[in-house]
Amino acid sequence: MLTDERYGLILERVKQQDIVKIQELVEVTGSSESTIRRDLTELEKKKYIKRVHGGAKLLKGKLQELSVSEKTSKSLQEKQRIAQYASSQVEEGDCIFIDAGTTTQHMIPFLPEKEIVVVTNGLMHVKALLERGFKTYLIGGFVKPKTNAMIGRGALESMRDYRFDKAFMGTNGVHSEFGYTTPDPEEAQVKELAISLSRETFVLADDSKVGEIAFAKFGDIKEAALITNELEAETASRYTKQTRVKVVTI
Amino acid sequence: MLTDERYGLILERVKQQDIVKIQELVEVTGSSESTIRRDLTELEKKKYIKRVHGGAKLLKGKLQELSVSEKTSKSLQEKQRIAQYASSQVEEGDCIFIDAGTTTQHMIPFLPEKEIVVVTNGLMHVKALLERGFKTYLIGGFVKPKTNAMIGRGALESMRDYRFDKAFMGTNGVHSEFGYTTPDPEEAQVKELAISLSRETFVLADDSKVGEIAFAKFGDIKEAALITNELEAETASRYTKQTRVKVVTI
DNA sequence: TAAAAATTGATCGATTTTGAATGAATTTGA
DNA sequence: TCAAATTCATTCAAAATCGATCAATTTTTA
Image (tube, rainbow over all chains, first blue to last red; front, side):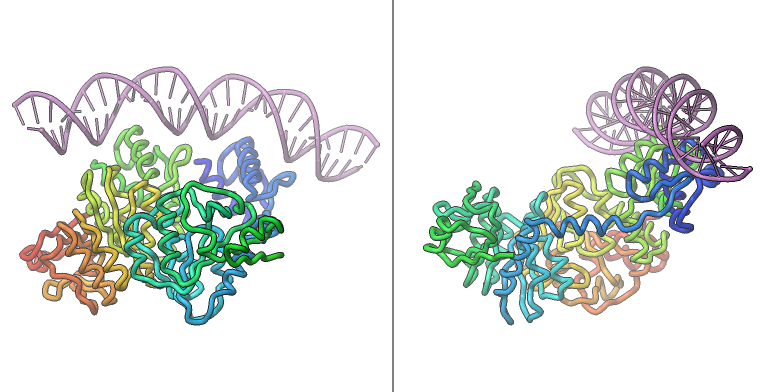
């Protein structure tokens, strides 16, 4: 009997009767006690069951714990607050562009229940957008394997068909002199075009991005309103001279 | 016993009993252990099964997909065989178009390990294509909520930038007089354009589609080679007069 | 037709899994 | 509490399985 076969059998039995004895499993599987013990040890390590003297019992709710610790993570909350504020800028009838990336992804749950049209270059956003019921357009082009962002000539061509009321951009660097930057020049091109096609642009950047410079520039500070979570008074003034800045606090 | 025959047999058994032993497969196929090992390695690489010590088991994702789509193992296998044959038509250096839809989706695991470029209008295909490591382009446009296919003016515009060596299309209806048909006129437009941009076109259709007529036509029978799993002698002749027909058998 | 490529089966050393043995730890029952 | 019974973790050697390699055969290509 194969290892995985036994695993399946054990889990099935545990789920069915909440608790199983080792001897019972020895009989059912025809394997030795040692083997069953090893199986139980392994399954316990994988958090599927809880071992008890003489057998094993069901383990409940491991996913919840994870999500709790995740939700309490500070940086996530900050990203969410930034995304929430950005989302509040969206108005009835808007046609908005949402950039690829994790920061902008957090906007989707906060987007208002209004008649809006969403265009994005982020493949990873589409599912969530459709689930929210928004009219969703995806830019065409080459799919960047690592990030699932649409890039290349096709992406640029494809985007030229659209005009946006508001564009919401992620970034890797925000610098008062060097502007907004990102590591991939091809992505930078897409971002740059999106900004030029939009009446108004917002850049979402948590404090870890402020002061940083990445390889490829996609815009000057003044070209977009900056939404962030923390800004020292001194640096803040440098940015506010150039553009609108919103600092969200938790 | 042919390689493809063994693949089919292995997949069938895995799907039927969730887990198979190598020895069992050696007996059933009459092939050597080495060959079966190679088969399993290959099928694992194509994301169809998960190898375990002593055998192989069903990939979890596939299992869910199966139960959701509620497809009998027979019709699934037929689709797979059709998709497998279609994939065998792909050659080194080809630029191919893969239509949105479940039938064409089955092609992805069988696509050869060659330098090819894949263009698709099916959002649902992208993940699997990237996992296989192919250069992947996605058509832009409006995302059809139910099927996750790209449609609309943007899709048409976006596609015009490309030319294909081969296009692989799904369909809802195949009729000797009314040609290839699909329910959604917008999707039909996209399909029609894809065919016109390709040097060569294949339509994948299991027997449930043959003789059927859906609302919107996207091509005449003669415009594509037909790949199906079953065809009565009488109807077969009607199609073979118009185009190339391949009937795959399990 | 000959050369090249792919497929296959066998072999072998390496790795993983298994079952039994041992003594320590835990539970049970008086 | 104590002793018997049971269960436990650890170790070790046998068995099974694995991946890699090679030669023979078939298929494809030039």
